[in-house]
Length: 364
Image 1 (cartoon, rainbow, N blue to C red):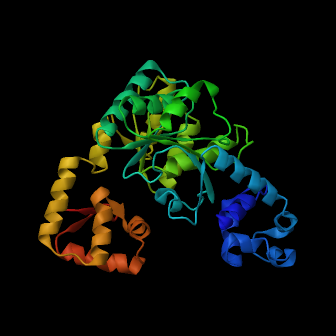
Image 2 (cartoon, helix red, strand yellow):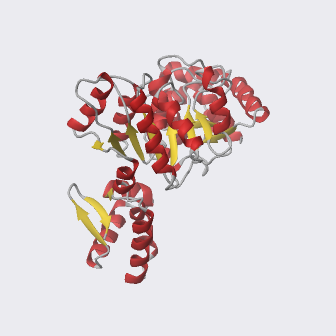
């Protein structure tokens, strides 16, 4: 908890950013140790500079961190740092992941399966109906739904999750001392029973315009895949889709008529090969290899084929969930890339793994 207090303090320094915090922690050997360094030492760390070094040296952010921890204790908020095992595993693999997450609710931030459902705030009746049907299909396969608690598609996805009894995680663009928009407060309260609300913004942070794109990296990073239901040519949903692509996550989009304003973004994602076309939740489950019958069959076949080494089992266990490139396998298996490459070759010789176009590997 002591290191967490200092990480909170670092995150409150204006303009510092998560990447710089991680660099400071790495150079100094810990978050607490950053505050014990002299200003002259901090200034010499690459990309830190005089202004940030001075902010650290002033130590006034430590008192603000104390207030944050007091609020968390009083309001049953979990404070999770990127150094803790409870931190969302999917988010940890993103280069711009937050160093601190504030979480409220009983649900896990490390669900076995998760999908982000996003779209325009000006959702049409058809868009809302499509969202509900998507969530219904995903809920049957134990998928946790992630979204941003905004008007339109976001809140429809959260409400559908509650309706079909699947956990849902709301990612906020402000502190946990408020809910925005306030009209969604009752839904947010219900989400806490099996899901969660999360944010990297401290208390007192307003839902300002510039916070929403930053929030979107958490929506994309928390999910195995992102579905865009309705979106105009520009908007937050498309930012989330771009972020998901950057994290090498699957992106899906619902197509629409070329004359519809809120189909233009989805159609463009599909047209420029930034998203796969889907029309139902079953399409997503099939693409993600989350069909329960096929998954169980494949797991049984793998066990019968060969006794796997520990390294082989790590790679196979990742591929049981979905197909991956060697880069993603390296990250998710937590093995060196050279070891993953040799393991994949062994598994190919055994006929357990095969290669798809684009150097994507899959279980046979």
